[in-house]
Amino acid sequence: MTDTLPEADSLARVVLHSEVQQFYARHMQLLDAGRADEWALTFTEDGVFAPEHRPEPVTGRAALTAAVAGAHAALVEQGEVRRHWHGMLDVTQNDDGTVAVRCYALIVGTPLGGETRVVMSCVCEDLLVREDGELKVKHRRVTKDGVAAPV
Amino acid sequence: MTDTLPEADSLARVVLHSEVQQFYARHMQLLDAGRADEWALTFTEDGVFAPEHRPEPVTGRAALTAAVAGAHAALVEQGEVRRHWHGMLDVTQNDDGTVAVRCYALIVGTPLGGETRVVMSCVCEDLLVREDGELKVKHRRVTKDGVAAPV
Amino acid sequence: MTDTLPEADSLARVVLHSEVQQFYARHMQLLDAGRADEWALTFTEDGVFAPEHRPEPVTGRAALTAAVAGAHAALVEQGEVRRHWHGMLDVTQNDDGTVAVRCYALIVGTPLGGETRVVMSCVCEDLLVREDGELKVKHRRVTKDGVAAPV
Image 1 (tube, one colour):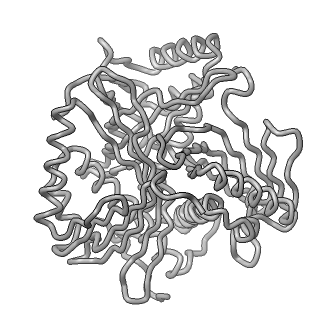
Image 2 (cartoon, each protein chain N blue to C red):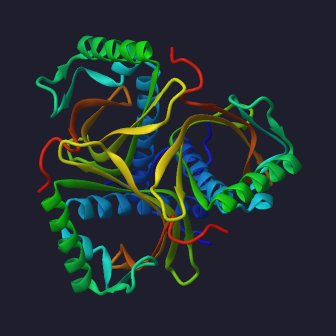
């Protein structure tokens, strides 16, 4: 038991860490539900989603919405549910007010009537910014495990 | 670095978020250890566990205890260990003091001398209430991936 | 909305819980990147890593560094990437200032050009201590699922 409040600096870090966790929870639940418009609003207007294993990054909310709507429709067609998990969040508050996160991502898939399996393991590096008090993804780099040789 | 304390409202949210995470950690460790009585105490006396893929919900601590004790005995008989992970917690404090959580659940299983696999992926929707200061599950709805066609 | 600050005691618990999560994120990212020296510095000088399924514990930073450097080199040789996830953290602040954590660990592996799979599920029991303000692992006991019969 203690009567001493933690330092303001510690508390600011904890608030940010919790906020990032809650942001990702909502962000991923929107993605997996195929709520493409709402998901795109968790990026900045010019937000970039850059998977290293794809030829081109997806840039801007319209393109992000279209990409997710298309991918979700294809999964529904196949009868497959996907769940994106983010974990092991290393959160850094930058001096310019932006937030850097490096974390792991696990994508779990289940076909209708079938077995659940791990579809993919990735590293996700996000640059988050604040707009009207809310966190948004400005840039996301995703590196899929198994694509490049480990070093 | 900052000298300014975060707002009381932010801090209250963070305390709740952390508390829910710790609650689930203990709750799931009790479940996986087969400590059925202690696990049932993390529900309210009239707590409901409603998996959509089962014909009936399990209602009340006595029934919850019996269900978990039976399931655990069957797993021990098979030599199988299960681990329940909750993640991507979207936590909402309701105006009436109850707490709504929508999160993902992953169940991982390992047979004696065998390979670990993902047994099940679910969405878990909990209504938590506070009794004598402690969080308890009043109602849990679990939707197992792969049972219904995705939409 | 609230104007009342949470109690100092609640805030201290939340700060610790968040700090442990961030500690593990950095700790595991160092491990999986094969940054053996930096990883060993997240243990105390005499830190012990005791997997129940190995004949001997690994003791002290030099031995910890060597063990991880060797394991990482072998994985690179095989073209395999591993990701260590810690979850379901049950964090206890002990009266002597040390911190006990019991949590689940999931190790996910992906071979070059191959499929991701769950390699291992474990229970991890850590004793953390503070040195110059930073958390360090003093003792880690790891129990691998599937080795002993469940009880």
